[in-house]
Image (cartoon, rainbow, N blue to C red):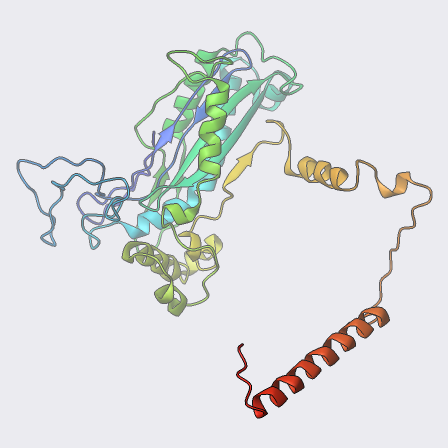
Length: 375
C-alpha cells in the first residue's frame, strides 16, 4: 500500500521520497478505496530486513542495508539508515503539498470519468457524483499515508445509482490514470532546487463488497480498517508533537527522537524562505509540515460534521429546540454579577472554617499537655 513522491532533483543517492498507497474499488454504487501516502524517506529499517551480498555503503560510510531482524516495537524501525543522506527537505515538502496533490487527484478522476462517459466536465454532476472518505496516518517513519475509499453515486447522492457505463472497471481505470498523472510542482528555490511531488509507482486496487468475500474486503472490513487509522494517534508513531512550537528552542526541547527533531527543524528553516511562506511551515512544524485533518470526506459521502454536531446538540437538549417550547425564555444578553459563594454557601463555608480553627486549637493544647498527637 503506498505512494511515492517523485523529486526532480535528487540530492543524494537513494534519497528518494517513498509514499504508500492502497486502492480499492466497488461494484454497484461503485466504490474504490484509495491511497495510503507516506512521505519522503530514503532507506529505512523494515521488518525483517535481509543482508545484502555486495554490502554497499553511502558516502558517509554507513551501510545501505540492515542485516538485523527487528521486532515491531524496536525503536530503530522506521529510522533512516543514514540520517545525513536522508531527504528531510523532500519529506517536509511532501507533507506540505499532500493536500493539494489529493485535490489534483480527485479532479483528475472526475475528468477521466467525464471523458469515459462522453460528457462535458461541467455536466458530470448531472450523471454521477464522486464521493470519498480519506484518513491520514503517520507511519513509524513519520511519513503521512492516506487511506481512502472512493465511490461513484448517482446525481442524487448515495440514494441513487451511478449510470450503467460507470462500472467498477471504469472507476479503477480513472483512479489509476489519476494517480499516474497527478503531481504538484513545488516553488523553485536556491535552497533545494526544483521539486515535483506526485504519487508513486506502486498500485493495488480491490473492490469493496457488501458481504465478506474470499478475494476482496467487505464494506464492514473496510470500515474497521479506516477506523483503525482514525484512532491511531501520532504518539504511536512518534510523528511530531501535539502542540505548536514557536522557536528552535521549543524544537530542541521536544520529547522526540533525533530524526523527527531533524524534520521539525527542516520545517522551521524552510518556513523562513519567502518562496515557501504560503505553506506556513513554521506554524505546522509540530506536525512535520502536514496541515491537513486526520479524517476528511466529501460533502455527499455520508454526512457532515455540521449535521453530526446539530444532532448531538439536539440529543443533549432532549431532541427539542428551545424555541419549540412557548414557556422557554431565551436570554440573549448577559452581564457579570459577581463571583464567590452564594449567601447560603457562605454560611456553610464559615462554619467549616470555624470547626477547623477549633480543631487546630485543641490539637495545640493536647501537645502542650504532653499528649502524643498522631497525624
